[in-house]
Image 1 (cartoon, helix red, strand yellow):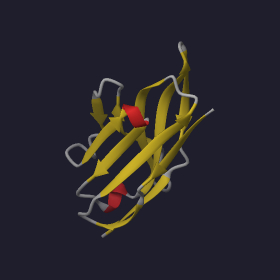
Image 2 (cartoon, helix red, strand yellow):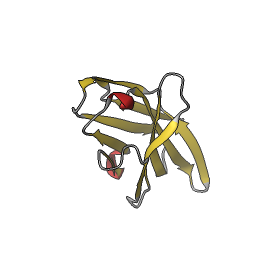
Image 3 (cartoon, helix red, strand yellow):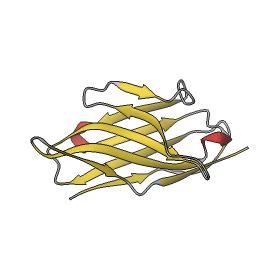
Image 4 (cartoon, rainbow, N blue to C red):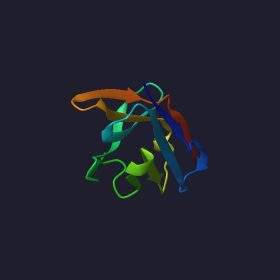
Length: 120
């Protein structure tokens, strides 16, 4: 069993910064793609940023130039540095990962989410 645990959310004023972390624990052979999603009230969950095991990254247009995703493979951890935050960034942020629990056995896991609130 694999667990993803997020931390680092909170309340911040517009223009401020937050750094989210997500650590994966449990039976892990390796981790392929690690992602950050977010879901605002009344909206669908959307992909914010993704990073592969080779450190290739992809971002939603709405966060490009403001957010940076990174990972520490030795710690099975993914980060999301969020700068120049806007009220429209307010959402629950979820960590998601494709985890190989054994060779050729990749499973998809989600964290419980962490709330980010940006005040105007």
